[in-house]
Length: 232
Image 1 (tube, rainbow, N blue to C red):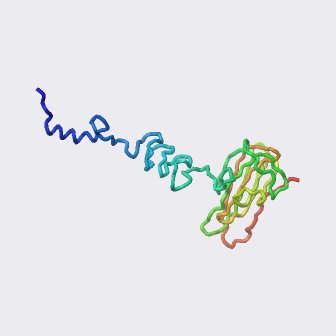
Image 2 (cartoon, helix red, strand yellow):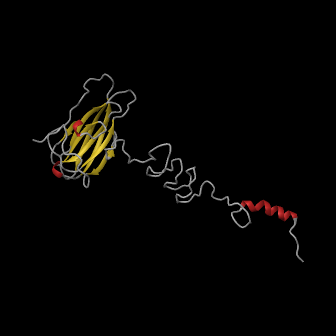
Image 3 (tube, rainbow, N blue to C red):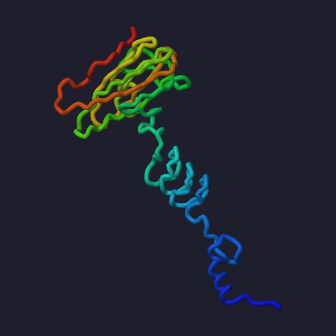
């Protein structure tokens, strides 16, 4: 004899059905709303919490390593590769040391207004902005560059346009001797530091920048000692 389910069983079934993902006719699939917690960038939610490391097209920062996550609040999503100057290849800041090479780079400039020598080797342009010390004082900036195996030279250009006619200082020691130059930068002023090869030279190198704040009213500012040694 067929026995109908009791009213209590029917009530229990109606209460439990909407809470499961499948198995009940007409039940709602509620699992996965907002965050799928997987490793793919395919949930397209707006909370940025799918625990992936790539672009999920949300409107917040998902902490990936590039600036392509469609963030609407900032143009740089923790990316260290973007440069403030369109013409510069890299960025360097006070206190940083960078190991790099000119091998495989282009030859953007051969002549600089602060030197009468031609540089036909590949070059790298570094964007640099003088820091804010909190009191409006300028910075005394010291740039060191150590070539590894060939004759690389060092130049600093004023402004953000990589304009070789705005060359302020040059260091051209010859061979693999270390290069050194100094300049004074007003707070927030923009500069381009160039590592360039002499007579098609290319090499690995180490570049470092050190900065010191100069108190307002301190004498002896202006252009400090550098080591420009233009070739004959």
